[in-house]
Length: 380
Ligand code: COS
Image (cartoon, rainbow, N blue to C red):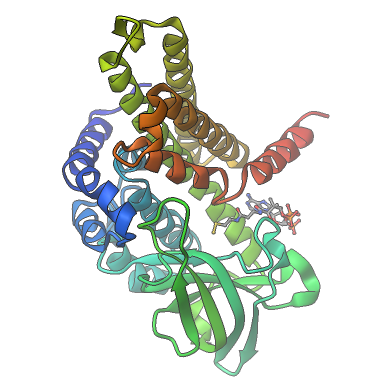
């Protein structure tokens, strides 16, 4: 795929940062579950949290392809850090930029894009995930304020974020047409992150439930129009899926690279196992799927940058890249055999980290639903 000089430079910078700062600590923070706050701050200073946002609000002024390139490099070094970046950039800065008033953008974006503040997104609830419209959190107007009550689940960056985009029902009888989006600031009374979830993978990323008890926010914190929140969520997830597709790509590439290096060194039956046809076929399948994933991710990014519809393409990119990443991580472990199964090598962590990309920001089943709906609409 053709890249501009600017895109190549950004990729190079992201690769160097990821190689020097993220990769060396990835195993350690997986073990300790320590949130990579310092590295996120450094990434803010380098512009890696703001790649595809305009300079006017403190962004780097680049495009979505550039964002995908950066995400791939970050994820290839540390999946947990990549997930934090995805939640911050796509899911919090994304909707504030796309739907915020000028005042909201000026108030929130510069500090988010510079990394001074961290962002988060609260859509899922303890009893509603794939059925996002099934949320029960309520927001009721009261004078100049809205009062929110309910709970949110799987909130990435939940314990560290300063700014949260929160969805709640403003007209419960209207289903998805009765949901609104709000901006809630950290420390607002009643808005309380719970304990950090003890996850299988991406252990350094911070995932929490948030309880919302009589959280009173000013009316000007409504994001977008009243009762348009579900569309804001769907639009946000379209963009987010490009980021998770790119993250999947980075995880897959890291798995393939570790396994290939091992296959070239490991001797069995008198020669490196990379000479065995079974291993060669695994490597060929890994590499082909990674290339296809990258093309799908970049295609969705190009459509987004061109202002064209990209819902289907983003879902395809996320679906294909995440499932291929899981296949690649599985085969990579197979190549290492027992060594793939122990923590001395990074593949065990990559395998655990990768499982999430088939679940987060819409499961594979939701992506298939989104894709099939579009195809059924297209073909008369
Ligand atoms: N962009 C803008 N609007 C969209 C949209 C999109 N990508 N997708 C749907 N909408 C609109 C529809 O056009 C419809 O509008 P009208 O009410 O004007 O007709 C409205 O949103 C409701 O859409 P739909 O009928 O498709 O809603 P469903 O309840 O059937 O939900 C799915 C559809 C399953 C696709 C949705 O709930 C979803 O994406 N779930 C997964 C959520 C997810 O990814 N969670 C992870 C969060 S990361 S923590």
